[in-house]
Amino acid sequence: MKKSEENHPLIEIWKTFPGARNFNVLEYKVPPIERIIGEMFSVGEFYYYVLNLTDSTLTNHHENILKMHGLKKYPSHLKEIIDLIHPDDLPFVIKAEQTIVEKMVEIGSEHQLFLKPSYCFRMRTRKGNYELFHHQAIHTLENESSFLIQSVNIHTNIQHITSENSFIVLLTGIGSRKDFHQFKIEHNLLSLPDYENELTKRENEVLSLIAKGYSGKEISTVLVLSEHTVRTHRRNILKKTGCRNSKELVKKAFDLGLI
Image 1 (tube, rainbow, N blue to C red):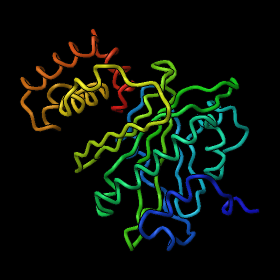
Image 2: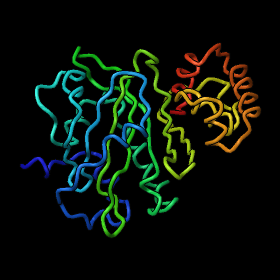
Image 3: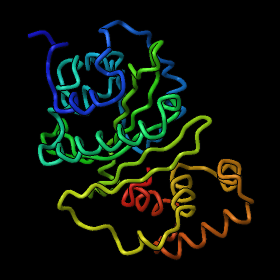
């Protein structure tokens, strides 16, 4: 069996995306990695790879993927990545992808290149144990029929920040889009801290940007708020979450699935 013919549990989910059955297996250009790095958020050791959504093949890997997972060669198919995910987390990953596809269909395919999904799951490391990774997918190419055909997937090891998965899926806008869609996936999991329901949608947005290192001025520009309002939101967030500084806010943002 050729690698391009390998099956994996996400294929059936992606087939529900409009036009997916009309994909042709082709070689597509390498996306602008420099721009991709500018759109990502990383607070630890990370790697990326280019995913061809027409046949689930992988190319243009960042070299860190080898040492972080103890691999001898670069994986050529998404199934090899999925095999690194903790078996208990795989049902969540499948449900997360289904949720993302459904929301993207609702928003409209004309916006798909400006929507970034992210969530967390455990992956096997070179030490032979499982550690928590943050997954981001930046969509980079669509064909002439506006069907999504390529993405850059970024995986960051966040075990040093938190080892607990919030089981929250986030779909955020990048570039010209300002989307902020958050989904809690029920998976017989521990509930989130009580303060989750105390934060307003705007406070969640501000917290997400604070954790990503945005300054008060930058947050005011992105969210079209005055700097005074941003400072007020920050004070309220610190009080509600019990955090003392930005470092603690980063961990809290992961716990709440805001990144």
